[in-house]
Amino acid sequence: MLDVDDVIERLQKLSYEEALAYWIASELEEAEFYRKLAERAKNLGLPESLVETFLRLSEDSERHAVELREEFKASFGREPSTEIPPLEVLPVLDRFERADQVKEVLETAMESELIAMNAYKALAEKVGDERLRELYLKLADVERGHYEALKREYERLGG
Image 1: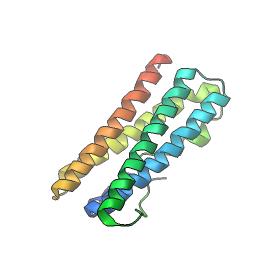
Image 2: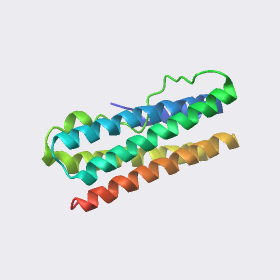
Image 3: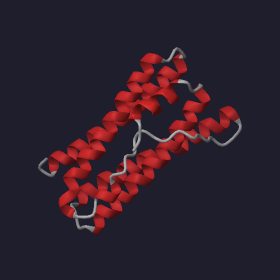
């Protein structure tokens, strides 16, 4: 299981370049995660609004990754890479095997987004570099948006 405190400690030591590479990898991982959740929801015959929410989150994450990768390549002249696991993606996909688990999956995904948002806010307060502070605050805002989209869908489903 992901040790959030360990990830925060490692992220706190990153340069701006390394943090940007981490963000790109996290967005790509998150895009894949939400794409798989959308497929699973569709295969289970769950409401189209849920499938669309997962697809929208996947597309948003993919778009962020593409934009950030271009920024990274223009700034640093190479492809980004990182060894730090993303905070946003918890292993919930394997638990999403039946339609009656949809609320549990949404709750877990919302919790994952909140953990990431709070971790990035904490990082913004701890780092001295202003560019890193701004980067982590942007990350926190992205995760807040993901949380809110999931929460709306959860409430729509009677949660």
